[in-house]
View (cartoon, helix red, strand yellow):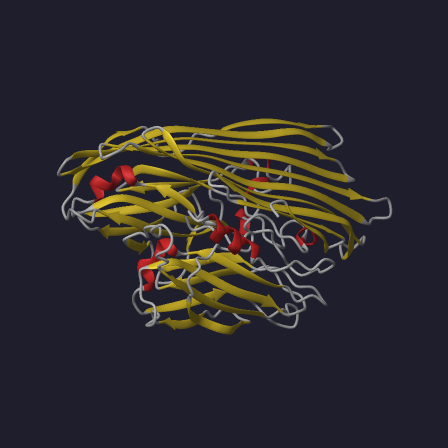
Length: 552
């Protein structure tokens, strides 16, 4: 997985890597997260600098050339991407960052906002071992952090990035198998804008004839009118409730040759300028600085993709309302012993589009006061089964998913108050089973993405306003692997953020300041092989107040 964790078979290696995390400075307002570092092997890495202290003060991307490390050619035990980013003091929005090798995205995230006396700096790390084939040849790269600097927006963004290549460590178990093919959905750097449900990111591939497994890494970042999609309401209520439209439900849809092939639920990333910037000083939201792609399992289609014919893979976002910034990467495993595979889809119950249920229960009084709730739910339960034929027989992969989404929003609006309470939940239960080979293999996962937002705006008698916001955001994933119905490994990863703050405005709408800021962030990993990472950070008055390591 392209996430900043990796469970090694050698526990000491993992513990040493986690323990190497940089110390946290109590009392600092600098941006910091509880995210773990990428665990490293014991071998000495070769480091390739992609760019150093590149300046981003306009919307022109920074180009670079990558050359593979001559002193440690692959295969590698681990490939780690590391970027250092900082913003000079001043006024600046949060900005989107995209780094590319050709049309393949290697980093997608956003930046922290600075202050008049605060220059936030942070480090992001990603395990890119899966993408190893990308790094075996010279590549043209591009770093894009779209940023505007003028007399009003003065914060300049600087970034440096490198790749660390760790040679094979023969003292441990074999390294994880990287993908054989890493294929971008775009031929050139840059995301594709999905403005509505009909907009697509698509690419036509003629693939190798021995594909035995396939996946699609999907990024869909909400922008513009869709930035706060989780606060949206049905179109007929958007004016009355002073909110965006198309309801509070969005979902990524994947097709192969027009046939439904997978679902990519949309995670509600909140950027550091989101709703109230002080909520995110110094602890940002879940994955805000370093997005994790949603990986869609397309392996049931492996036999179809191997037939030597061109196939079009497409991504869209249901209910997109201008707009989502999207990119995706197709990842393939090839059969090393066979050059010509065949197969077919034998079952596919996935419908082309979801059918969300909307319930409006809004009452408007004669004096204009508004109270009530709006809810939207979506339930997707489907099975996709397909096979590839090998010399010894059929290998069948069956994917079963149950994706449930619910959002309930409560409103209480008067001439002096605006209250909006959001309770949103996405649960994803997945089981992929493969049989027909030497053993029956299965991977099961349970993901939970709860989001709670409480927004309360009060207009005081003197015309000043107070906006109080409380947010709880979580990303939980529990994964279990089994062989012949016997568990071989399990892992639970949890990232939780709680934050609250109150903004004060003058009667003219100018921000005076904030008060009562308090936040916490926890990141934990527990594995069946004894791996433990459990870090909790707390902050108050926009400064770090504590750091707790629950494993040491």
